[in-house]
Amino acid sequence: MLTTVYRWPRDQKLSISILDRSHVLLWFRHLKDKKLAAGTQRTKILNFRVYLRWLYDNGHLDIEPECLVRASDMPPMPLQLPRPLSPDADQALRLKLARSTCLYHQALLLMRQTGVRIGELVSLDFDCIRSDVHGNRFVKVPLVPYG
Image (tube, rainbow, N blue to C red; front, top):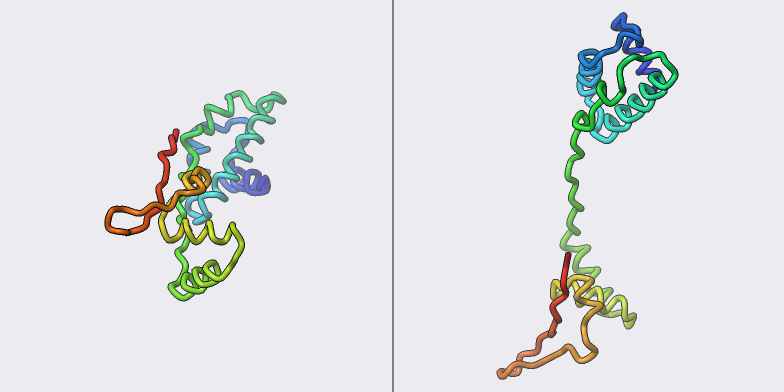
């Protein structure tokens, strides 16, 4: 990482001692133009700020690193949702859970079939299966406070 910190100013004919915010913004643009992943850019920027802090603490830089690299400069991380199971894999999982005698497997199957959350699952009473006036059976889930 530091090789890019050293190489980029040299290629731009800049001295680290005269570095200002406009130069740092150019470096951010350089990182963005390289089409690096947001996490990689964040790592490089954080490492750069640590390097600037070292330069400042050792008298090689006159401006505070926090003025050069701000928290708002960090590229946002993309929201990555988990991929859903394929229908075949989902069916195979349900069958495997249904055939199992393991209590944990049965709990996972109950969660998948009813949509209860883990907090609701662990708070279920032993006799949580109820019947309505028509003979339909349901799971009585107690309210769980969140927050």
